[in-house]
Amino acid sequence: MTTKRILFAVLCVLLILVIIMTGIVISKVKALFRPANPYPTDPSGATQPSATESTPISLPTQPSESIGSTEPGHEHAFVLKERYPASCDSFGWTEYVCECGRVDVRDRVDPLGHNYGHGKVVSPTCTDGGYTEFVCTRCGYIDRRDENAALGHAWDAGTEMPATCTEDACTLFHCTREGCQETKKENIQEGTATGHTFGEWETAGDGTTHRFCQVCGQEETMTVGITSTVRESAVDDAGTAYVRYTITVGTAETPNAYIYTILDYLDTDPPSFRYVPEEGLIVTYTDAEGQSQTVTLEKESNQELTISAQGE
Image (cartoon, rainbow, N blue to C red):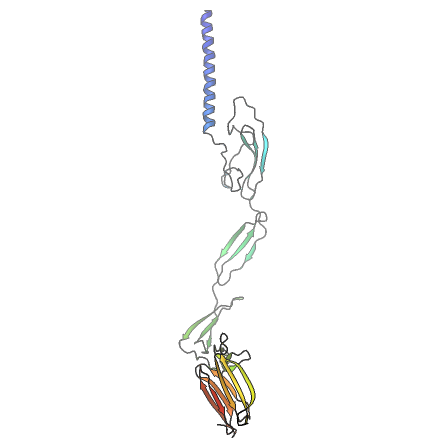
């Protein structure tokens, strides 16, 4: 009878040992396949609960089961690792860690939600829709509400516009909404623009030659013109006095391209000079009888003109 009791006791001890060893093996296997941190991380690297505002997560407020390796019989000693404050759209929590690697998340705080100030009403315009804009005073998030469509232009009855130097005749419409400067043209009469009516070419002090439209004032500048005019008193071999004009024609890049010489033996009124690229140097003077005369010297050449005492 005593022997049976001893055998029964030995079997019970063996059974208990088997149960204990089985539990240890199962714990080791679970620890092997369990991730070190089941919580996702934000872009800054901070560990945080995984949840949305519509389905908040349930985090433990007391130490949870071990995350990370630990030894049987180990007593955890948690220390504060970091506090993550809640923001408008993310949870807040406090994270503790044990030297064995176990992480414990406590004190979860739900997202705060945006704190909007007074809305700013933006009225619609002809081309842009309107809305009411709210700005979060904590994070600056902008929320637009009550959006409505653009108004579109409100055109007037239109004004009949005559043709100009460069524009065809048409009907011109203006938008009547305050602050809008848009216009549109309709009933355009193609080919009715009149073109410019230019005055005479004139040489400016900088050596360039200009002319202006007598209707709209449009300026046109020559690429070739008189770059300098020199007046000198002289005496020829026969002892006769005259005035020599040296007219230099060119461009800004080649100011001395062509030189024209005018010998004025009449010397009553100073002659005038202008250069037209399509024609040449145009000399205008007053003859001995008081009549205005015009002579055109060939373009792009070096020429000489003599105005005799008889005005020829």
